Amino acid sequence: MSFISEFKAFMTKGNVIDLAVAVVIGTAFNAVITALVNDIITPLIGVAGNINFAGITYTVNNSTFLVGTFLNAIISFFTIALVIFLLLIKPAEKLKERSAKNKPLPIVDTKVCPECLSTIPLKATRCAFCTSKVK
Image (cartoon, rainbow, N blue to C red; front, side):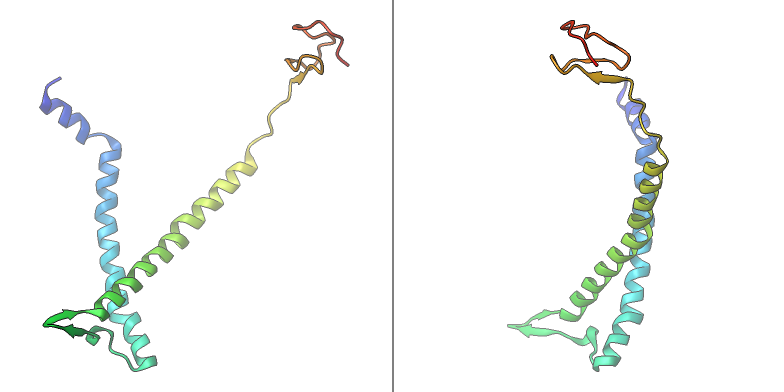
């Protein structure tokens, strides 16, 4: 197989395309959450505490540390984590629980010989391995 055909086969696999779509949607989602935090949440927190997050900076030896921007990033991270937890993880767990409840119980058609601990049919009266009588 030539390099071009191998690369084409790799790029057309479903999981590569799914990953690309997930990255694009994740980037757009990140932009929305960052805007929400920067434009709505932190100003609301600032009004309550009379703090301007964007203006919080420290300067040491001509180096400026943007503490407010860092705080916005932390709030964005936790907001994204909370949304993912509530919209993806919790519903997925509920679906797993439902599917586990709907699975039929396995049919038991074997038992264990008390003498040799071999697995034998449920209706057997003698063990096929050690020939002992089984109740």
